[in-house]
Length: 516
Image 1 (cartoon, rainbow, N blue to C red):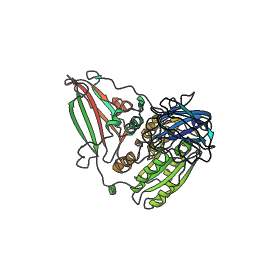
Image 2: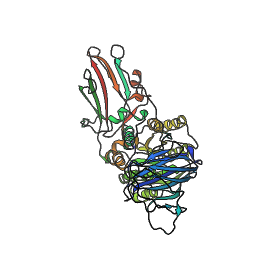
Image 3: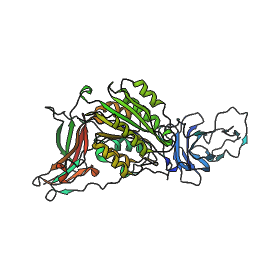
Image 4: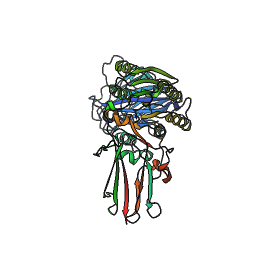
């Protein structure tokens, strides 16, 4: 029996470090209520964003220089304000919008100066250029725009649902050709590896929540299907898993049928599972300061720590410009010590992901628990720009350590520079799970509700092979699993890597079939 473990995060944004900065802010009306859908652009550029339901907006990757922000909202005066973007810094521009029918007695530009403008009542659309108004340092009114500059290494505030700038998105996804229909007369056998990852579902949810169209490569149907719980019966007679099959009408093609094949892993109590040797590998580079990165990471790992047994061992390795050990191996009964180290983490520097992975594996190897759950839990957005950075180099290292009994589970965070293709590959090569954490609820699902299945592997290299009878099935198509397809001969090849099944895990595969 082996453990599957938790999750990890490395976040990065450094491909533009040293030459770009960020702009964030809050848009509200004259009553202080947040405005959803305010349009914020940098004049003369393709950069922009829209405010979310809480009024926050976020623009990333803006080259250092001087710009003009233009904020528009239907029924409100347009607000125009100059902004200076500096390398590796975040500029905060908070904006108050006034209805066109409102009496505009005074506006302020707060930061290096304060400004006042007398405006007459009007129903026509006009722009308010705050760079041209007169200084009024004695004013006490708190309306207008507030500008503050935060050091990128220490800023920890802001919004939780950033929307990347229009036209500047470096997220990466691997595209896969959709499975085609197979004729059973020529290809009666279908073979594939199981997949218990859930990252695609929560990542797509993030896109939709931000009113964005998901990247086609982010859609992996099997991960969406397997995100949900199914009422499969547990295996009997101490078997590692049970198989369940079912057939129904195909909802998108009434002429065909839908065949469901489900696996349910054996459920074990916590005291029946092996002791864990966990190394948290956490990205604390400069871009991790965003609220949906390092702050959410801390909350996620707090959930995990609270569920550790007293005999489990935890280490913490972090990396930014360099990698280092924050917490030497510590037993699970010292939760306060572990949590204290987590809370002290701050973001800053570049992204030495390769050095971090090497150090984490070294620490895991030194404290290897024979027949235990030895696992690296990586938290990141998948971007590495210092040291070992190529996917092939990392795959080689991770595969070697996997064969030595150390698995890798990956947690993805953030957006704008997210590298989904890399993270999925690393988790696959490391015999671990891959998750995308977009909010606290998802964190609780991964580290509390589904903890045992996500932490403890009970079956390695699980493959499914289905042989259709040409006399009853004319053709078939596997729904999803495009990047898990195997050759027929791979099924009996023990050296061929496949997916892992955790304690209590459920895996579902669907076939669209045409009966003969």
